[in-house]
Length: 168
Image (cartoon, one colour):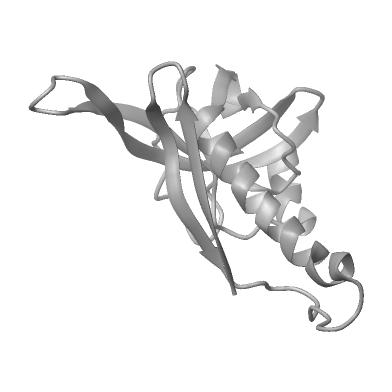
């Protein structure tokens, strides 16, 4: 098990952008308890670095929906996605305002639908709304628009065999 405290602050106005403890347990090959220190911690540090990078990307560099084409193809910015990866599309809801100061603290986010990465090409990735198990027709009528944003889903990636019918 591991935990790390992450805090990102805008130094110009002291606004806290991210503050949280990222906790998890290492799920991989057994970490050796003897040997050189870099060998012992390198796998755990790699897993932790991925979680921190995903959190920073989610909060500070949202993955934007760039284009929605006929046939429902959704083009997003590619931040290292893989074919079959599942992302969730969100839109902004009402702002959350501090009643004492009137400052907008953040905006509510509303999940629109999950999408599946079908193709990755340079700085963009092309996706479709996820209509496979377990979602089936739940999001069939979802409408994705330019300017919405995506975050990585906790859903497992979809394998190539299952994706094949969507690629036609």
